[in-house]
Image 1: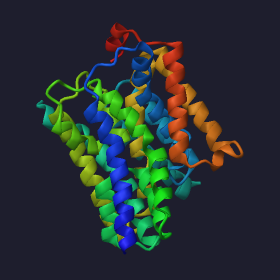
Image 2: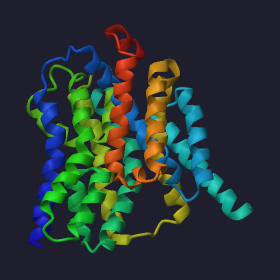
Image 3: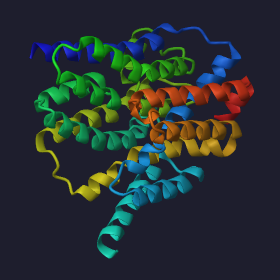
Image 4: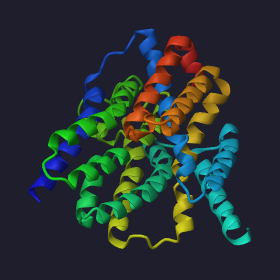
Length: 104
Length: 235
């Protein structure tokens, strides 16, 4: 039990500090062009690396997941909002899993 | 719409996605031998999926404090990059104590949505953080308490919510910017390599995501450096 609290302190403390220190202490604008470009690309590369291939394994079937990504992707390219694309992806997965389970 | 309510709304899809992900975490934590309140406490104090999952894996063994620290630092180092990135975009009034307090909520998804803003207002960021935080905590609580009561098919479908959200963030920008498209392709290609190639696939996913994301963004920065005007236009 004592272990749990020490572990929790390390887990929560290190996670908090790694987030907050750069955010709170960096006050100046970064002028270096390469660093600025790197920071501009980071969100897209993080999201891309997190999405594929992991999303294909996130649901019960790879086919349903791929279908959800494709349909969501089509609406995303057309500039639909976050909630809309998320809902459409989920509904597609659900529909495809239903088809795979009950019709095939 | 006011910044706070706009943020609150933007956080809803993240919260829905978190609810299903943390539900699974709650179930897993209890399966590992933790009480529901311990799982809840871990979620409420860290709010990090990969970090928490690795964390409970280490916690079941006594006294591995150094392992815990090292694993958390490697898995979560990406947050530092996000914090640095977002610190460049915050409104002038978003400073000092506000940054120390709101920095706590810097998750991948909250960061991604916030970084789509031209200038990040503290009220927007606070609003944006609330639903995901509640979703993450509530999901863990429900998972820890009642386990797998939802039909499996609904659980499965909900798991894609978070990725659908990622698509909605990346796709419109990748459509207009070839450089972003190249960075996205590089990140996915690298991650596939780390996912399937022998030896490489044994590296924990929290670390590989950092490596792939950093390498792809670095490639983009070296090949397609962003000019100030371009950066504004691309947003």
